[in-house]
Amino acid sequence: MIINFEEIDKKERYKIMSNSIVPRPIAWIVTQGEEVINLAPFSYFIPLSSEPPVVVVSIGHKADGSMKDTLKNILEHRKATICMVTSPLLEKMDKTAQPLPYSKSEVVEFEIETETILKEYPPIVKGTPCAFFCDFHSKIEIGGSTIPLILRISHYFNNNVERCELVGRVGKEYCVCKDRIWLTSS
Ligand SMILES: Cc1cc2nc3c(=O)[nH]c(=O)nc-3n(C[C@H](O)[C@H](O)[C@H](O)COP(=O)(O)O)c2cc1C
Image (cartoon, rainbow, N blue to C red):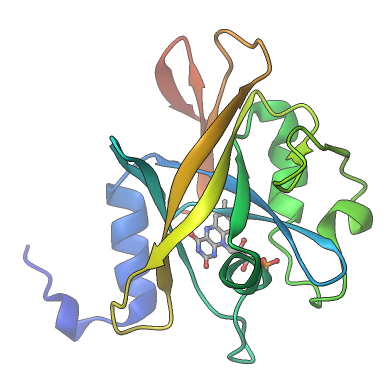
């Protein structure tokens, strides 16, 4: 069967891509807003290169057409802290995908503890096994409402966790890496 991407709608394209390109890592991104700390997950996220050390994360817009808070904050403050997610953090991470008003912080709303590691960067989520402190590098124009941002890693934080069970995304479900094998919940 051949599917012409021009002939299917965006939901169908999302379904095909997110179930075939798997698992997608999850960047749980902490940013500083005008007044509050913002936290949200993004799985259109991948490393691009380790020399230079850069990742790409694609962030869209809210239903009202305004930029998602993470996108707005990165473009304005040019910093992002990317926390990796393990099973014990999964439920909280999933909650932070709820669209809150810009003035509200997910860390306050969902009682998520954070900790400042480097004072020039947003804090990490407490309990994350590792995190990347990043600077905004550039954005890529792809002609849609999603904006891929290139972020350059400046520092890495490791919480002395050796073989942690990182969570990834398959379609709209999650999977977990146990003993280097990805397992889905079903
Ligand atoms: C696991 C997961 C992955 C997600 N990946 C993306 C993504 O790659 N790009 C995107 O724009 N939204 C993604 N979302 C939706 C955002 O997390 C959601 O729109 C969130 O409200 C954005 O928050 P913000 O406005 O505080 O930045 C994802 C949600 C979940 C649960």
